[in-house]
Length: 574
Image (cartoon, rainbow, N blue to C red; front, side):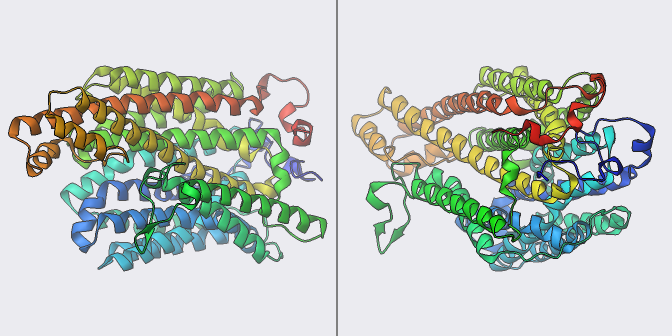
């Protein structure tokens, strides 16, 4: 049987596209309490990192640590999930999906409680970066698999849309929630709230149905090491590209005063290439295990399914754009305009509202349009929204066009969220849903890392170029212009524009020259933001390449046997 073939008892399970509306199918669906509980868990999983990003300064003061240590904690949280996501998906099959979900939720809650009570950075690192990350890799794949087990027909489409909306809403609402609590109470309350939410989720887990008994399979340790090492190398290289540079070394790590840049090439290049090589070794290992009659960690033949490849690629691109938006806009709002975390969250709020609304609108549209049509509309609207945002860029970002651009961007992300989860999970039989859930987690992680890396590199590189060019053409003294040109050769550090005048005066500039230097830096930040939006447009348009394999049929309009219910092997690439 192909991994994409419907299981023999397909009539008792969900149709592949989840679009049927017959009474028997609807009667078999769980109550909406189940998907609300699963959506709450998904919301918490995504909320964590967005909250921490806007709370860094208060955490640093509270724990007596450094920004560098906090950035390391944030990076390690991402690496923990990247390294263990496929293992977490496999454990869902071994332990049982519901049991893995409950165990993961409890572990995550314990990590959140440890983080909330942490007296220093070491305890925070253990609770947040390690324990929460380990809980997340059990919860995230199980969510996708349990949706497939508990919902059928159109209810399944709606359930996946709710999961997608929960993810997007957490990304958008994170700065608002974190900003409010950080500003008026304490960052610790965020993690206390996560403990409460996960406790409620565990309480309602008894209503969730797991139709698949645990499997007695041996997990291959070599595969675990290869997948973990490969994903960590790729993700770490992407995350550090803003510091290390992509190819030409910028700020390479040093040992005894000697920068580490083999053959004069940035570590980013070596890490990514090394990670790709290790992952290729991992794929080869999985095929050898299958040939030997042993259970692989991941059934790599799933990637031969064209619809799944397209869905995962589109999902990764969606997260890349989302991560890019939520890197550059908050940076500009806080570093250039001097807004606090709460004000930044309010500026982003239109995106959050429209994302939720259009996630559900997309499920209604699926009875009229095919998933491919809805996904392509979402991708095109996303690119158009980036153009609107580009046109709205000014010194204060107060143009109505900025709000319109944020709203339409949220609408586009909502349309994508309404389709991609169901497209991916319906590409295989429900017995493979845990593995596909893990693959979704990997592509979300890779997409977010890539989006942050690309947009961050574009923003910082453009800032250095624009600042150097503005200063060179200014009336500042010649020696100042030369000094700025030399200082910007290796990039420019992102600092609040309001602080540049004081930096200039501390360096010996007159008040007038320091003021002109500050204006040059502020102008450069505006120009850098515009260039970053061009990069975002390019990523959004590039995502269209992944939509060709998304299903193009509307099940309700298809006569006879629905095409979407045929074995997906017929749609697999040769």
